[in-house]
Length: 128
Image 1 (cartoon, rainbow, N blue to C red):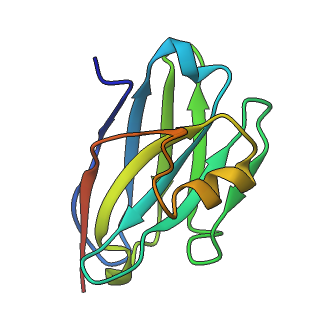
Image 2: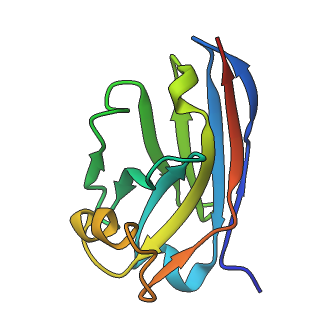
């Protein structure tokens, strides 16, 4: 049974918005740090946003001010609201979870650490 299931990807013109969702299994939702990372062909994997169980958040500089991470505790769902999208945001977007602070999420995604839980991804394409 998959523990992280993403949805909400698609194609949008530059300047548009999308909201990604990630349904998280109950056994990790309340205790793990949850976040989003992305990877485009030929580019390094990039952690972009994370939120701890206490609400502490962190964003990559490349998306700060444009993307917002949030949680719906009633639905065990993680969201990523993406506004003012740019063609450079085109990538596969993944949901992830780690048992540690937001800083560890940003580290763990570099190697997709065996100590994390990773989703299957959803494609986002932004046209110019």
